Length: 220
Ligand SMILES: [Zn+2]
Image (tube, rainbow, N blue to C red; front, side, top):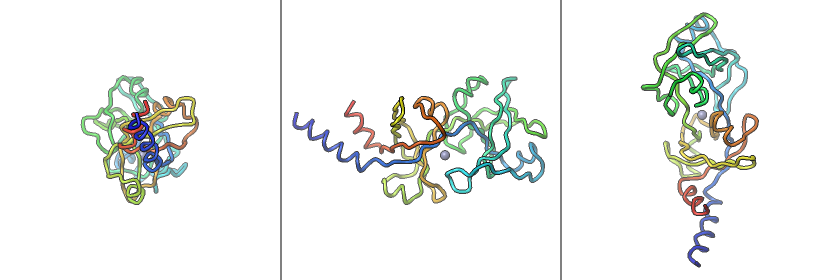
C-alpha cells in the first residue's frame, strides 16, 4: 500500500517535469507539389500566392486549390502549401480516403513508396500522379534546442494530451521530428481534431514522453 502511494506521488512529481505545453495545429487536406507538376497544372514558373504563413518557418498556405479524382470520385478544394518540394505529396484524412474509396498508408511526410496515386485537376488541366497520397502520421516538430530540453531524439514516439475540450483525449503514436528548420508545434489532421472536439485551427496540448505515458497508465 505504501509502495502504491509512493509510486503515485513519484509519478505525479516526475510528470510535472516530463510534460511540456505545445501549440497544436490542425491540418486540413492539402497538397505539396514539385516544381514540374506545379508548372503542368498552373503554368511555367507559376508563383503561388501566399494566403498565410504557417508555424514552420518558410512554409505557407497558398490561395490556390486543386481537385483530385480516383475512379470518378472527387475531392475538391484541396489547398496547396508552399514552397515547392522535391516530390508531390497529397495529405488527406481517413474520412476523405473513405469518400474516394482508397486506402492510403499512414506515413511521415516524404515517405511515399507504395502510396496510391490519382488524377489532379488544376486550371491548365489534368495530370496523373502514380503515388503520393498519404494520411499524415501525427507528429511534433521540434528544434534541436527544444528536443534537448525534453530529452527527445529524432523518430522517438510520444503522446499528446488534449484537455479543455468536451472530449479530452490522449493521442499515442506521435512521432518526434527534430530539425533546425523547425519550430515547436504538433500537427494532427481533421479527423483527429474532431475526435478531440477541437474547435478552431489550433489549441494547446501537453507532450508526454514515453516514460510519462507509462506513468499516465498507472492512474487508469
Ligand atoms: Zn507538420
